[in-house]
Image (tube, rainbow, N blue to C red; front, side, top):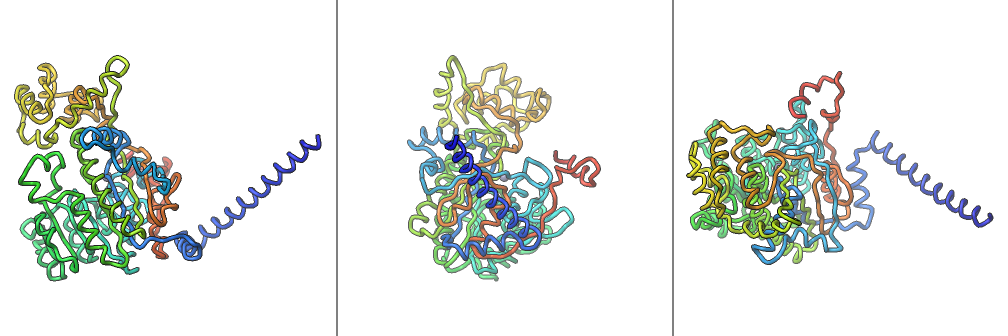
Length: 507
Ligand SMILES: [Zn+2]
């Protein structure tokens, strides 16, 4: 009995202690939420504690990368390169911190890239389609403006148009389709490294305002580049604008198949290495690196293209890890902004015994769906479809399946699931017979995303995070005291709220 009492007392004592701690914490949080911005507290904490803080931050985004894309990418990588993705190897590193992140936007649990990048870039959720701008038009101060004031150099490297949503979310205020304005804002903000595609948005012959933006960049001291060789020779002491394609850079699968493209267009890993070589001269820098076309390939349900983009991203990650080994004051944050179309490698055959042999066909593909669509032209015949798919992937499409697919190219096809009613989704379904990979749709998904951090400050990126916390962590680690305004989630609104119509557009 007495033992029992001792046990009970001990239990009560522990509970009381926990409760006191909880109440103390709750009091601190309440005080913070009513008066002092959270970032100020976090920054103070970083200053007062012994927490190691980074001098360099590299934020790596593999855009639109579902768990299935990573998994299949890892299996593909083993077959194609004899080793898996570095991203997964890092999970074995005891110093690596891991988190899942809720990337939802202001108006939907399914984010687009603009709202996702804005959440990292402003610490505030915005509606899909918006870059660092609230629904009432208020502009949020972007991460790169704040880091500039604090003396950090900044870089954006991507395989998409450089004005695309993910890079723009760190530096611009706009709607995501206002690419020409975003290009001008990069000059206004003097972002030191800009490497990617999207030359047309800088070109006076193609811009609505006819502004000669490359000339203005040059006047501001930039080295302006269009070709890979120019990047190799670019002076390290000047800021860089490199646009290596009129639109997005080519898919890796098409890039590797073309000697001309290989000569003209740098890989993501090459751009990353050179950006790091240049920025290594600076005392402090923050660099966003985006593997942007994983997302595009997944939208197209093109697994052969998607896994090659995953490997290209992984090679850029390798370059960052190599840099970090020489510069241990570097924080790496590796993540994605949302799932896209959630591919899955399905069990096929008796005891799923056909799945592994199907994977063996993945390295045989030599063309993206986009490239095959170029070769097909408008309204291809079933025979043309068979020959182009055979040449691009090695798959001999059965006659009746070729007829069914041709009906979609002729806009006469009908899928039972509305979100699969497109040529590309049907191509994805067709190739599922060959690769064993199925898809959920051609759209983004609400999946919580993985985030992995390594280096000084990594401990802040642990557990289950909200996307907006990434911004707050970066500011705290750089000793920047600032908080952007936030507004309540629109998708949570009840039927009486004025935002219902806005919600209905997206939910
Ligand atoms: Zn995205």
